[in-house]
Structure formats: structure tokens, C-alpha cells
Image (cartoon, rainbow, N blue to C red; front, side, top):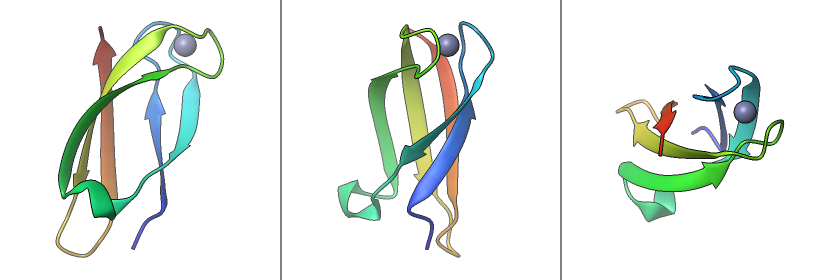
Length: 60
Ligand SMILES: [Zn+2]
């Protein structure tokens, strides 16, 4: 089961790695600031049946 996932910032395009926790559910949406440009990304996190995390980002 994945405990980290990565996304590409919707603002600057840089890769970010974040900790994820399936304890929050198999589908989660939350906002996190990019570690590079510090602008907010709305992240959609899904855990697939095999426990792998899929993360996508969009601008707030
Ligand atoms: Zn960024």
C-alpha cells in the first residue's frame, strides 16, 4: 500500500511528493500548497484496489 504519492503542481509544473493515508478513505480531496511555488493545489487522491495511490492536481 502506498504511503506517498506524487503530483505535478497545477501552477508551476514541478513534481511534489506528499504523504498519503488510506485511513482517510479511498477517495479524498484536499488542498495542499506546492513545495516549490507555495501556491495551493486542489488534490484528488484515489486508492486503487491494489493499494496504489493516484494523485491529480488542479488549480484552486
Ligand atoms: Zn508549484
